[in-house]
Image (cartoon, rainbow, N blue to C red):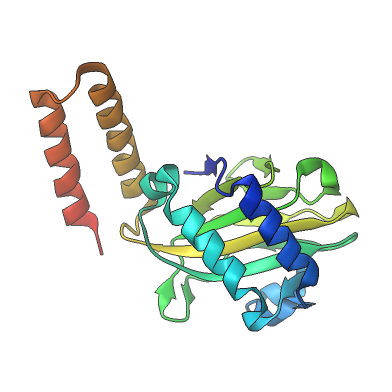
Length: 217
């Protein structure tokens, strides 16, 4: 499943991130790409420890967001990159590495740091079996999607696109199982809002908890 996660960053946090990025040193993004992705990656990224405080802020914001928790079931957020796309820069068609250091990459995410009208082009494009979907969300919002998805970033034709990208090792590595858990949790919350703590609600909670125990790794 592909999820839009609104308002990951508050306006104050967004301003803090942008200020830090305006003072950061950027390097060639190819330096963090896999051997085959280097051919299609054309962007700039914050160097090393320069953005550590901002990375920690973004991780914390994601972890406190209830939709991110329910949809992704995060065990480890890792390999977070702070990227900048200027005019003519893009990231061609690729899929993300399955392993990054000691962690799996089950879920990929992008946190948008520039408003959509601050740049032209630069859409995040997901490729399906028979179609493509383009995504360009407001600053502070995020998108999360299975790391196995073929995707690209279209060339920026004007302005500057700032984004944070990263990966998650999920407690539940199978995307179909994560979707089942998300659907059941959605039904559980709706049932509680309508009827409170009923026998049916308790049974649903038990089933959801048992599935999480069975599928967690």
